[in-house]
Length: 86
Image (tube, rainbow, N blue to C red; front, top):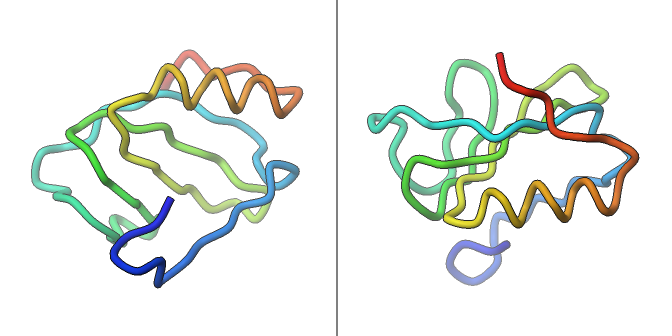
């Protein structure tokens, strides 16, 4: 995923993901790269996102119009299944 010319760039190793879940962002979170309540969000589309829990204890959200496909890819490449939500 890249914004603009590919900078800034963020790479997350799948081994660092401890859990993930589909979520819905608040409309006022906006689009682009954001820090919201202490966690990062890269939002490229709408209100739907996948929230990642990282081994460091931090959270990271990826906003996308393809949350189901992203969750399926994470399931395929990790031993994890999506959390039912919080």
